[in-house]
Length: 623
Image (cartoon, rainbow, N blue to C red; front, top):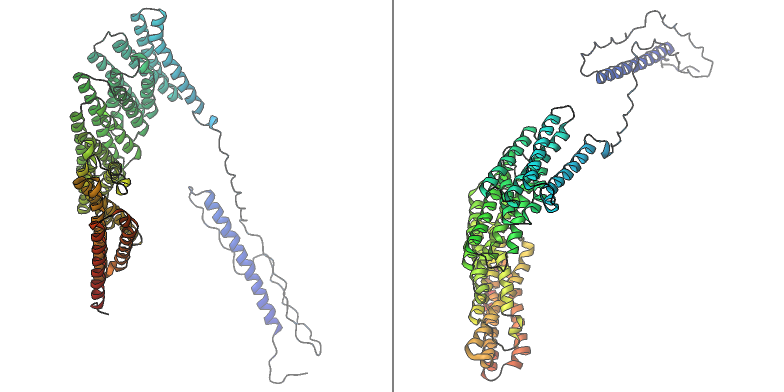
């Protein structure tokens, strides 16, 4: 059946186009293979000069391969539509550079056991050998004397010979290949043995005067630090000091002042390698032994009546440890950009000065602690570049020192007043200087002062009539506590320490604390003025009226301060409710005579006035 007016599709054109698409597909695959091979070669030889890229295969028919013969026209059967022509895919030679396969993924290396790591076993053996050798040196110097072996001169001379031999052997071993660990162990052991030998000759046998013994020990320590710097070996410097600190008490007969002197010498000498190196382990090794030794001496002296010379000596050692350890720690913490180890060692170096009160008279202790607090605060304020944690640590030390000075200088009766007054001063200064550190110190003083106040005037004072030891001090402390509570919440909000969500809760707690302080002051004043009978009743009557006045003021403020209207309204109503509860539950049963009448009349009139003024303030507000 013929379709007049419609042109038939040329089957040869369809076959030709199909063959060209097949050829294009094969060509693109060849290009992809070449690119894959080139990328693999570039990755395999990244450092070598890249070879010229292979020429891309020609788009024409490859030479040596005749073009495919034209397809024969397909005979169309009558009544059957034309079928698409499927040309045979042309064949092409393989690419001259077949793509290399991707390299297999390298397996994850297994973690090597610790005993196979470089130098692990040798370091363990070297440390064990050094420990055993030094113990042998101590036995030679001390235990041999107890057993009667050799004479004192022979023992000390033998110790010196062993020390020199170990140092010489270590210098020789260190120059050989693979002798770093052995050289460090031998030299460190020899220097520690030499230091112990000088210590024994000075303290155990008493041959050298203290000045000469310290000079010889300083020479040995300086030699050890110089070798450690030359070899850049922190373990050698740190372990040498630790070995001396552990074994030296055997030669000094325990922890004595002489041991403190030699350890202080090591603390100063070991600072030289840290001048331009970050060696935290050495910092710990040179600071901890002398601080512990001096602290033990101070604690052992607690309760003993020490002479003036002994007091001056111990105070001098405490100041020297603080200056040497604290000064070097300040330098290191600024240079090392705020190392936590340096900050901890800084605070640790000041510990003996905090314990110096065990051997000093009262006012000498107060002067020393006050000077420590002043110097530490001056460092915080003057020295630039101190990190936050260092400033906080130094402020805590200054707070502890000032607290100790206040406790030592103040009689027990006036202690809560003094502590709370210092807290008010610090918190107020924190608000002016916008200093969170000063605020934390003031809060700490306030917490301690509050505990002392509660101990001097317990809550039972408000429930039963009895006197206190220092009534006027309790009155003053109660009023200062109320002022401190308000100041703490206000400045905490200004410093951003509490957000708007917690401000209301903080003000509620502040109100309770202030109310307790004022009530205690009022009742204590009544008892102190008129005795436990009339005075107690009069005090509670005045306290009830004060509560109602406070509720009136809060209600008035709630009408004039829209930003805090909800909080002040709730506080005013709460105080009024508590005042009424006190009036009916406590005052009605406790008060008698005119005081009961005055309490009810005064509270009623004040509540009427509060309601009238609040209604007037609400009616005049713009709506």
